[in-house]
Length: 114
Length: 113
Image 1: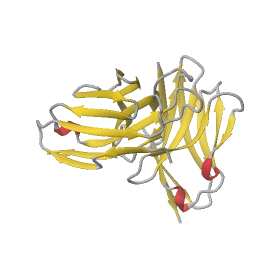
Image 2: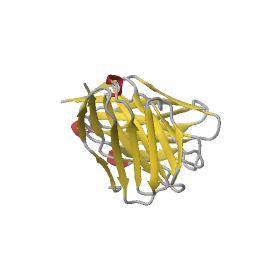
Image 3: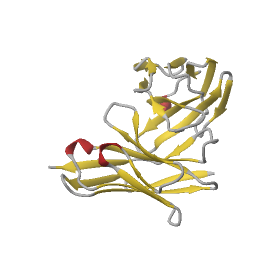
Image 4: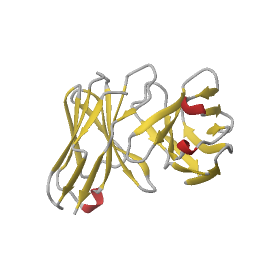
């Protein structure tokens, strides 16, 4: 079984401030981990993913995440928030390549204040 | 952008009527998924398919059925719509191997009155 917990359903930061969105997972096998972003009235888009190898992964729009096995975490960060980062962010876990499905967290809405 | 379309994009229907949502892909990906998105619940998997005529239930499958007769099409049917099925429905696809990330369609907003 696998599960994802996103800590904080709403996060608010000022423009230019650090963005930190938290994700903890549970998986009985080495996980594949994903962050997706959803802008209003759109489908989800992949931000970044961890499968194997380097534990610090970089994605689009300046975001990055670090896989920490000991902490079962995959937190998403961006050094400097931009107004265009305002969106809903979803963390997801998949039990490896052969698993047919992913489990998504409940999402975190990021607000960026001017 | 991955070639995924959903139809219709918006639908209003009455309680008790059947409704079919269509997902069409042009990527030849093996896996296709139907999710519903509701405030406070994130994305919940309804059904998914791992090949033509091969489907399996997700976490919220009651009241829904699916069919996949061709690689490119995945249909979601609400046999008798209820107000609790008012939601935004997303289709997604993923390849068997490689990136294994999912690509999402634009969504269908369904309202059951």
